[in-house]
Amino acid sequence: MHTPRFHRFAALLALPLLAACSSDGSETGVSDMSSSYRPGCKALGGPSYALHGTALLPQGAADAYVVVEGEKIAAVETARANVPAGVPIIDTNGVISPGLVDLHNHVAYDFLPFWNSGKRWSNRYQWARASAYETAVKAPYNAVKHSGHMCEAVKYGEFRGLVGGTTSIQGSMDLTCTRSWARNIEFTNFCSDHVRQDVLAVTALTQSDADSINAQFSSGATKAFIVHLAEGIDDSSRAEFDYLDKLGLIKPQLVAIHGTALTAAQLQRMGQAGAKLVWSPLSNLALYGQTTDIPSAVAAGITISIAPDWTPSGSANVLGELKVADRVNRERFGGLLSDQQLVAMVTSNPAKTVAMDGEIGSIRAGLYADLVVVRGDTSQPYRALIDAKPADVLLTSVGGQAFYGSSDIVSAIGDARSYVTVDACGESRVLAATESALPIPQGQESLDAVTQTFASAGVTPIPLFSCDGAPEFAFH
Ligand SMILES: [Zn+2]
Image (cartoon, rainbow, N blue to C red; front, side, top):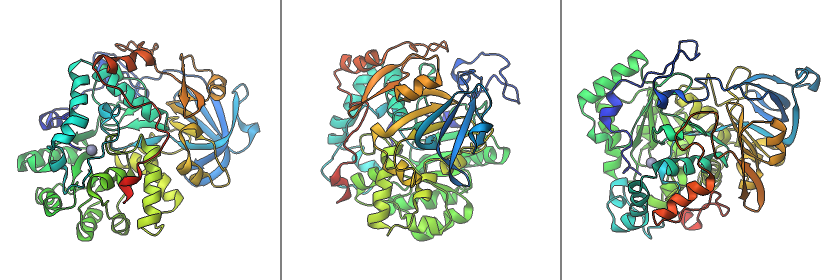
């Protein structure tokens, strides 16, 4: 979708917010709240612990102890005896995965139910102008927005991510009131601000804009430029790619969301240039009846990530979208993608795509402890993650801090956060919905209070958990 104008292009060309950090990542002073309150820029000094389970490591899955100290993974040990003395060991009996990285969302919309428009469209500009879209999506969104509740909308969207193992998310809003919870990909992370996005039509870019962006690519100021590209199935959608190519923007830093209309030749060109792709199959199928030519993208060597887009036409969160991708892979692509490749598309691939693979996206010593634990068949650990239902998520930690999980694991970690009990499709889990360690406006607002703000705008939000999976109509 395209309508929210979180980052107008003018903002994109402006200098990135300067993080108040020295080059080694330590904080030297806080003047800009919005860019400073991030785990990874200022160490929060959380508890130390070791998670024992079947860990999805860069070299493959293995029984391991993932030792977390402060915000980072201090070590990955294969023997219990190697875990430092005094560090509590938590036997999860589950699968420990890198935290899921959602490279495409419109987080503030994620309180809205799935919208079945009753028809298929040719491109993203058609349905966004339809009166049915106005009624189903835009009107309730605007009711919440105009009631002054964007903080709560974004927070709720991030909660929906966290309960599905999401530790980093794109498409949020740069609001100080949301400076905790999931990492926001396009804002300051790890004392760096090198990801840009433009949610408008790429055809609005001028040659002069493109020259500025290319200069940012060359200087390293921008390492990933995220745009909706060729979202549709018609010639006008395909022409967006050629337009960007003419502007000289098919580059390694280009991150194309959707690419639904792209031909094999265009994907080949993308692959040669090193450009990246974000695939949102449910949103594509529901709106257009088709999805991106992933087999050609794979053949072209493109780094592909899977992301849900938003709840009005996509999955509840990236864990839900992973199941859709798995189904599409089986039903339409002949099982081309392995379980391991699918998991990479929600972990290491998106981290690499936004040049954060030195910080997140894998489980290895030195990286930030962004982790998700799921229960399932540990003899098929990648499959266990793909098949994990909402109640199978046992822990989501961001920078080592336990934001969500089973009360057993969360209390064993001993995080000082306060938690609220939530119903994860029939099972009890706990969520750290409030933030007291950082002076965030509305940080102490309870989950109930967040939910009630929607009611005050006359809107009923969808539940925190989607227990039913993707709507069947989308696949036919
Ligand atoms: Zn979108």
